[in-house]
Structure formats: C-alpha cells, structure tokens
Amino acid sequence: MNGKSEVGNARLEDGYVNVGNIRMHYVAQGDGPLMLMLHGFPEFWYSWRHQIPVMARRFRVVAPDMRGYNQSEKPVGVGNYRIETLMADIAGLIRALGHERAVIAAHDWGGGVAWPFAMRYPEMVERLIILNCPPPGVLLDHLRRNPRQLRRSYYMFLFQIPRLPEAALRFRDYRLIERAFRGWAVDKSAFTDEDIRMFKEAAAKPGALTGGVNYYRAALRGALRGLLSPRGGLSREVAGGGRPKVKCPTLVIWAEDDKALGKELTYDFHKEVEGPLEIRYIPDCSHWVQQERPEEVNRYMEEWLADYPDS
Image (tube, rainbow, N blue to C red; front, side):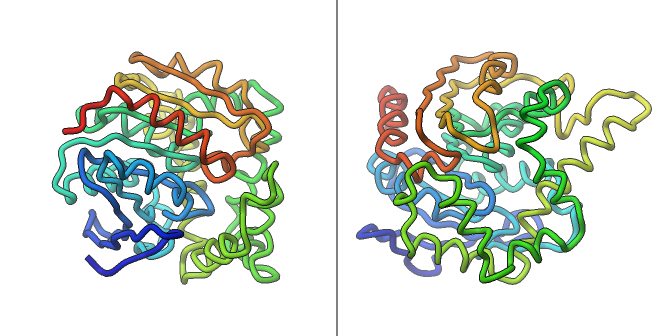
C-alpha cells in the first residue's frame, strides 16, 4: 500500500499493482467479496466517491485509475489502448488482488470495457452493474442507423485528430473539463469546486489527456480494421461479431437526460445479455449519474445485491 486517500470522512487505502505492461493505481475500502468500480472519461477513481463507502459495508471495493489516467501509467501509442489490452488489465487486476472473480460496476468507458470483459471472461464476473454505457455492438449499430445518436457522438470522431483534442481540453485552465461536468449536469450543485479541481488536477497529469482520448482512437481504428478485413463484418474486438453474450445477472442504471447517449440504446440491450437483465431509469439526470444522483444509484445497487452472498 502506498498511503491513504480521503473522500469526505472516509479514509481509503491507496495501492499499486503491476498489470501487464503498466503500474496501475487504485483506491480500496472494506472487506468481503471483490467489487471493482471502473470509471469513464474524463474521470478517475474519484467519480465513485459516493459509492465506495456505501458498497464497502459488504464488499472489498477497489476503484482503479484505468490505464492512461491519473496515477496509473500512461503508455505512449494508440495501440496500447486497444480493447483487448484494456480487458487484460481488468483480468490482471482481479488476479493481482488475490481473487478469481468480482462484481463489476462500470460507467461510461469503464462500461465500454466491462461489457466485452463479461462476454470474454464470464468466469471472472459474478455480476455486472452498468451505468450509462451501451454494449459496443449496440452503439455501433445505432451509429449506423440512428442519426440522432450519430450526432450525439460527434466528439468521438473529433477525438481522432492528433493533438488537437488535448489542446482544446487544456485551453483556459481545462475549461472544457468543467463544462463537461457542470454543463451537462441537470443539477449543477452536484459538482463542488473541489470536485472540479480534482478532475482538472487528474487531467493535468503528464500524458493523461492523451491516454484518455486514445481509448476513442483505438476503438475507431479497431472498428475500421474489422470493416476493411477480408472477412468483412465488424471487428470482433469492438463489436464482437460472433462473441458470446453476457451470461451473468446484469443491472443497468440509466440517466435519461444523457447528452451523449440516447435512452433508445437501452431498448436493444437484451440482444447482448442472456442472463437476467434489469434496467432502472433515472429521469432528470445527466450522463454523470452516480455523481449527480448518488442516493438513488446506491439504493438501486444495494437492492439488486441484497441476495448476493457475503462470502
């Protein structure tokens, strides 16, 4: 362990583990079965600050900084952020923590890794909790046939431009970072000045912006490789053509006022899940659902995990 972090009055353990070709940082709290909490863009473990102490009453909660973010290492090159590598990070993290499986809660890009991880490594996922992130195959299908979702996803294509997205995000003291949170939020008070400072500080770490944007670059390149392959069809690593579906019990918590992802995406989730699937909608809430409406998110998670064994 490296030390202690604090969220409010909760003291969290800081740790580092070697996973693949990187050193990954995480915070942890509690004892019991393992629960991983995977964050999105442009965040870090702190986006789960409202959930960690609550879930730690029953679980060993571990919230990593994903590859390329905050205090985790940030390897250079888009190829280091392919979905297969990101999934291998999660498998390696579970094993490095001394476990064989975990409950996984994931938001945004964390969900973009967790969905295919549950399909590729079913033996390592006890239950899956997804917040405002579609399975990759569903998203790609909507990008092809849903003009509204294509317009919402414009930034994914802008992120393909070298260096420009990072420069824009750094401009005027990371103003776009603040606008992403407070500008999208329905309840602006959900993000304090301290919260915004924390996110800006994480984004300002050398290589962090490029690391986060490289998730988008690697994903699109993977999709194009699949489309241009002799076999045709979408890339297995992005859309998972022919891959198995999610077999574990899955809870989706979906904020309805997400400016990046339309509610209609959730209507196709059953195509990707063979196991029990429950979807709970939260109206009048933005993409940052676990930060804007933490009490409801925590309640839904606790209710859904009420029958989960403690050991």
